[in-house]
Image 1 (cartoon, rainbow, N blue to C red):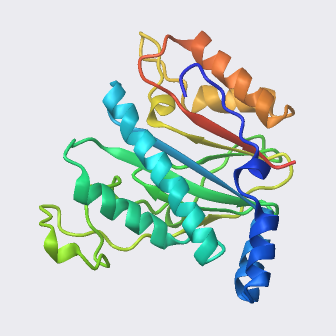
Image 2 (tube, rainbow, N blue to C red):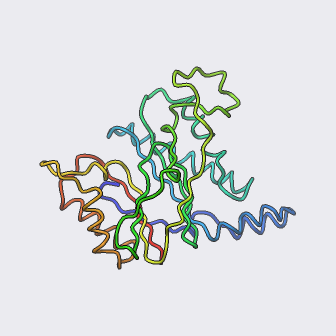
Image 3 (cartoon, one colour):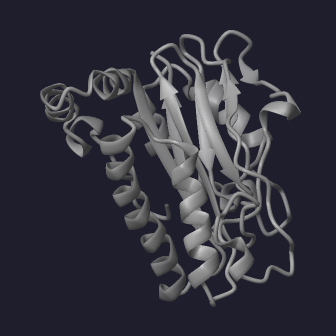
Length: 252
């Protein structure tokens, strides 16, 4: 977010080959099979916390580290990231947070066939730009189910829920949304609300009209180049009044 562009090499995050060999050595062919499927997935987590103080940034850092530890455990136990991880993260933040900040999050996995499966905790929905139709396409509402911000409500399935009072009752268990709109040349943008709220002093918004124009002009570029250009376009459009984070995914 802000003035930083981060590149992630998914091959350096977790050693799938080593985990697959270890699973087979232990006689866990079922685990090895699940791990093999991850060769076709890339996972993306984007989180945003209300506020701009260092303490607010620490909340997202806490989520990031807890998430990475959880992913490692999930790979060792299940070979894949399950909803259990996010239920546990939500429970942990609910039980320990006294800060009163809103923490939104989207986690999704994009597969090499263009399918995007994701979970949203009060985060803005993805934007999909169709290369064929040359515009941002509508996504059905039933594919955009979202849940309360992380840590604001315990889950009904939380085994410890009776030990913690909840003025907002309990949330339903997390569910996965599936988007199958990623064809060759399509672009998907995950973003924080800072992008959706970006506007000039006169009140003209960048989102979604200017964003659509930008993607129409830059759709032939690689994802990394689109990232660079989008950053410059946002800064040229208006001074930043909020932090902005975004992830660009392109089907090649």
